[in-house]
Image 1 (cartoon, helix red, strand yellow):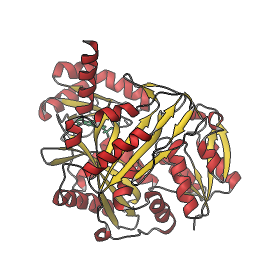
Image 2: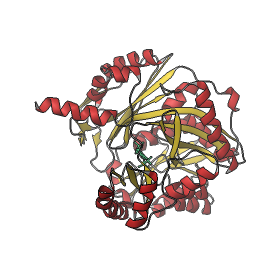
Image 3: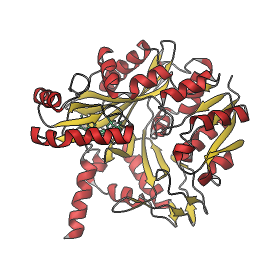
Length: 452
Ligand code: ADP
């Protein structure tokens, strides 16, 4: 049994994990940088350890500092949250080598899926449909041109180690591929320390639909529906909903079973997300995240399941709490990522929060680590809260979201709240008719109108 969990993260996700620990009567340890001494996760955990300076390379990403913190506090498990070290295979291995439980999949699976080329190859072999693309990496421009000719333009050049929406460039012609190939490689090398790239068909109007899966590590796995994350800016998710407005039960069951079978076959352990692009009623695998995702609460809402509790249970007992046929979708859920950013340019807006009022009421959940008087440091990402709505159907969820956004008060810094209020007025959003390019286009049109 796990007795004490060290949370190798910060912000709302650290708090989310501490909350699960409290309900399970498991002790929690927060780690923090010097910039986060007053952070909410430090206040809420049973114990806390300062692990380094503001620069995350020397604190939240420092494996020796985190292992030392485990030893000092006697933590017998580590939860990595998302981002930071959550998909670092050697971190998972080092944690296990110290006889500490890593709450997540095996380092072997993290490694397999962390490299997008290996991930695609594995998934293809497991019978998961993939985006047409080059056979492995394209190491020279000539290879890339040859692949693109076969796949047909437009194509997308992608870094195998890419993440966070970075390391991708579209090419609509061979000239453009010539122009972008080496820059993508160079950017990948600088950002991820790995310059390997590959070519994929660039889908023109897909939706981003991902399947939540869960495995016990012993060959049993199940799926927990999908999340539709098509509303994106710069390949990054802004709003997520479940179920997707465009899937029916049959399609959901088909793709869900394919994913669960694949995960059972590799004996995947823990929660994970298999990401697809969806166009013309077809799914195309793009990548797998071997961790809890930012948008996990929409799945929790429609299944009334605590995914962090399940993660802890799998890590400590190697069992799942339910069978596939016990999982029934109830209603509709939408999440908005509230960032401390100034519109219209989305420039980060760190600083002191002078007033904060969290929305409440039936079906409203606010996962946030801010409080009145808190100073948002400039060193980390700008997510300050996730507003998660649950209602009996999509229409009610949208109405409830509008009501909740109206209650949210964050003074002292700029936030993206107004963006969602404006989006809710759009018929395409109301009708669920949007692809991964919808938001970028809407923002461009808006800018154009403002400049007229
Ligand atoms: P990351 O690891 O950076 O999140 P992903 O491979 O998950 O990268 O892709 C992120 C987003 O980039 C997708 O949700 C989609 O919007 C866009 N994208 C990725 N691959 C393609 C593709 N082949 N065609 C069109 N858009 C793509």
